[in-house]
Image 1 (cartoon, rainbow, N blue to C red):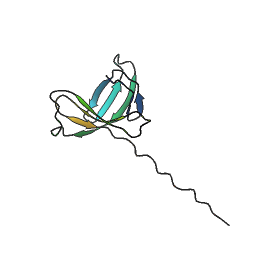
Image 2: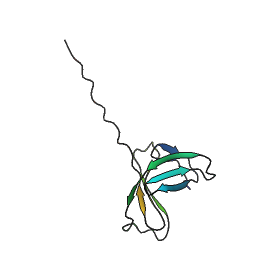
Image 3: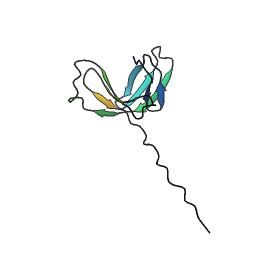
Image 4: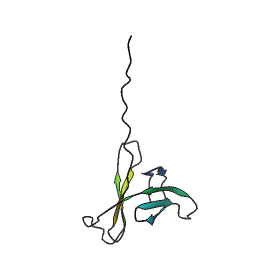
Length: 102
């Protein structure tokens, strides 16, 4: 349950509960608790959770990009210690306008 809006790859989630379901070892689906609405399905990167002290609980790691944006979920660690990083597209760099003078 999130107490404020968060971002996942491809979607912004409002505050509330969600189901995170692995469809394959590297494919994750995020849906509402009734399973009626799918917010996003995306590939994740499995990571070792050995360095992460989970105390038997699921954990979510956030990253705040800008103060005016919702935090991004960057990793999800299951109660067994397995972790999954969430990949985000890097912002496209804007190239300066090149004007040709004649």
